[in-house]
Amino acid sequence: MKTEVYSAVSQKENGTRLGADLIRRGQIVAFPTETVYGLGANGLDPGAVGRIFEAKGRPNDNPLILHVARKSDVKALWTSIPPVARQLMDVFWPGPLTLVYFKSDIVPDEVTAGLPTVAVRCPRHKTALALIRAAGLPVAAPSANASGKPSPTTAQHVLEDMDGKIPLILDGGPCKIGVESTVLSLTGTPRILRPGGVTKEMIEAVIGEVQLSSAVLAKLDQSEKVESPGMKYRHYAPDAEVIVVKGEARAVANRIKSEYEHYESCGFSCTILATEQTKTFYHGKNYVIIGDRDEPETLCARLFSCLRRLSGSTDVILAEEQPAVGAGMAFMNRLLHAAGFKTLQA
Ligand code: AMP
Ligand code: MG
Image (cartoon, rainbow, N blue to C red; front, top):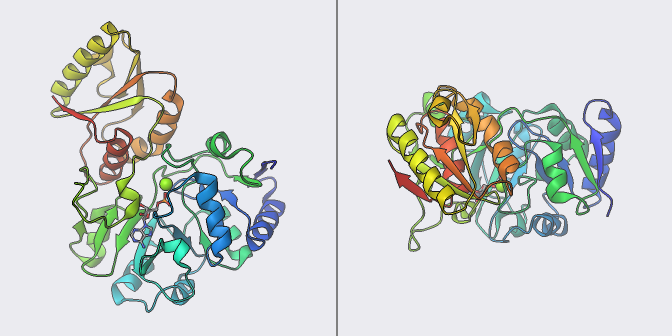
């Protein structure tokens, strides 16, 4: 299959029309959102949904998120709309917040991996909204990477993983947020299953205290119940060993330097993920500056493209722990998953 890339700006109308046609005909289209690029198909057609799992190599027990163009479209997908969902939709939709609630009968089991609940989001990106509106149906869309790899934040990343597997990529330039949506379950006490573009603090300012799944910042125990199946898999992993060094900033830098020297003496190449504040510690070593420690949003926006760039070009990536508050929580969640939860204490 030939994969066409259409500019979401200069080929806007044609791209939207072609994309919507393909989706209505059961095919897959990659499109930009404010979080990461998505791989979209008709969310009410089990065959089309099956093609997403095939293209990604995604385990079929990992459910998908349905994307809608209007808040009112969620009515057909859930058994009802709980008041807390209305409050959140009013503030955060369109935007990077996914809500999980009990599914209606029209949602195929292939989307939810057999769960009684379905995750729904209304994205904010113009191209995404135009495509979903033109398709006229809920669009099931996971991140447009091969399963396990870092999520794509540019059309080029999508092409690297999906060339020849899908007919069309809409290129809308780099994604602003760069990490996936926050997934919030509303089936009981509101609970964050995956941190993302909307922070815990932002949600709590609207509906009061919310719970945080234990799988967000720690590895799941074999015996623990999996609340969000996606969290049990190694994720976001580049072709390199990622190690996260935890602790106070100065001690972290010192430990990273000694690990670097150790790996180098064993013949492995290393790269350090540094910040503006810590780069001077790593003078004479290979490092990339991922951003400013005080701007976790920027760290999020650059993480996946950094991991993709380093993938295959270094043996070991040594990364500093960042404070897991605000957008830093999503950053640490993705980084720890990329490391397969391999950490060292400084
Ligand atoms: P991705 O498609 O890569 O953005 O991943 C979607 C995430 O949403 C995964 O972590 C899924 O496990 C999670 N998810 C989707 N649907 C549900 C659901 N019904 N209940 C809990 N988690 C869900
Ligand atoms: Mg994904």
